[in-house]
Structure formats: structure tokens, C-alpha cells
Image 1 (cartoon, chains in turn yellow, green):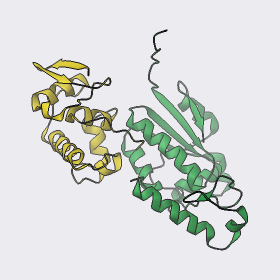
Image 2 (image 1 turned 180 degrees about the vertical axis):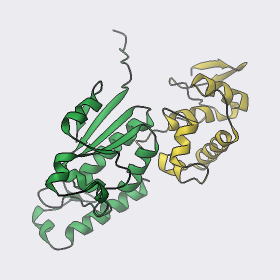
Image 3 (image 1 turned 90 degrees about the horizontal axis):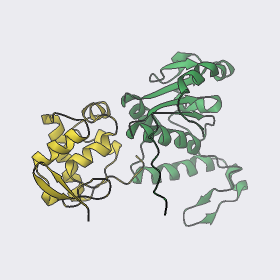
Image 4 (image 1 turned 180 degrees about the horizontal axis):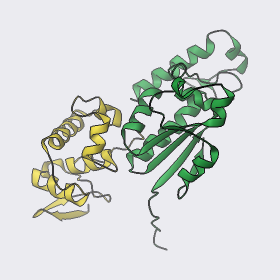
Length: 104
Length: 167
């Protein structure tokens, strides 16, 4: 299992850099991961999306651009503004959950 | 063992939708939305019967091709002889069944996908001028998220620097 040093911690990751053990996740790690993908500041809206994603994964719900857009937390436009260039990929990386495997 | 070559990510992709059956339109929509999700700028160009997918009066009622579609079959692999597709309402029934399956997988409707593409900020939707003339359509007949009506030359200009996919 590959590992990564970030924000003073060692975390387990897969080959794409996604966390494989959510219990290791902290807000500091999230902020550091966000900086790595070009998001320098996580606002309350970002954290709301992260929380939504983490809850969805815990419940086993599908994470698609549609479910995010209909979440009531953000719409599609806001989602792309918060996490530009690959919103699903970036938000899941920062949330410490696996990369979504679907096409939508 | 040679090292796996990593290619550079596409910066831009352009997709052409020529047909108006639901399955063909979805191919172009999923490819376009998928590109936007990857941060790839995407141009989606509708021409000929593909214009149905961006015509207000038609875009919510696209159908699966029920006749002359040799791959069509019922769930469970039950064959669907093409002659059955000629029975009235059969095309609508097949389409409803397909849409129900898509809904289970959280696949958005045609209209929703177009909105998502537009709302991404990096997806652009265009209509073909020649096809518009052929079908006697005006821009006001189209869905309001269509950016503009293009000639094929203008499309090539916008597509330059990236691959073009025709679905």
C-alpha cells in the first residue's frame, strides 16, 4: 500500500493518490491536498461539499455529478467554480474518499 | 519491460452528433460531459437529426431506434425481432424501458446533461447552420443554452488543436 507524507502526517493512498483509509483524514490534510490540486483556500462552501461527499460514501450512495448538483449544497455551476478542472476528481481527493469509478 | 508511456492530457475535444435517436445523442452527451468532468474543454456540435437534441419541442422526447437496430433486445437477452418495432407504440415502450434503466443508474436526462455541460463553464454547445436551414429552424427554436450556430469552417476553427469525435 503506497504511502504519502502530507501536513506532517503519513497517510495510506492508492496509486492515484486517493486516501484509502478515511480514519486518517483530518482538515489539515484536506487543506494540504487541496493546495496540491490548485485550491489554495477552502471556504465554508468547500467544507459543506466535503462533508456531503464523506456522508454519501459512508452511506454507500453513488457519487455522480448529478447527485452533487441535486444535493442542495451546490448546483453544477458552483461545483465547477469551487473545484475547477475536474470537480468530482478533486473534491473526492480532498475528502479522503475513493475516486468515483463511473462515467457521470 | 518498457516503461508505460504517459501521454499529455487532452486540452480540448470536439464532438459531433449527427443522429437523433436517444442512444446516439447519449453517446455524444456522455463523452462531452465526461470531458468537462476531466477539465477538458469540450465543443459539442449538433447537425442533421442531431439537432433534435437541442430543439426545444423535441429534446424531451427522443426515442430509441426500434426498427433496423440489430443489437436491440429485451432485458434478459430476449430477442427483439425488428418487425415488432413496427407495432404502434412499441418504439415509445422501448424508449420508456430504456429511460427507466438509465434513471436507476442516475443517468441524467438529455436536457439535464446539456445543462451540466453548459454550467461547467468549459463545455460549449453549437448547432450546424446548414442543418438549421434544411430543417427551417431559427435560433429561437433551439434550447437556450446553445451558444451559437456555426458553419463547418467555423467549427474546424474552434476544434483546432484537439481531436474530433463523430458519434
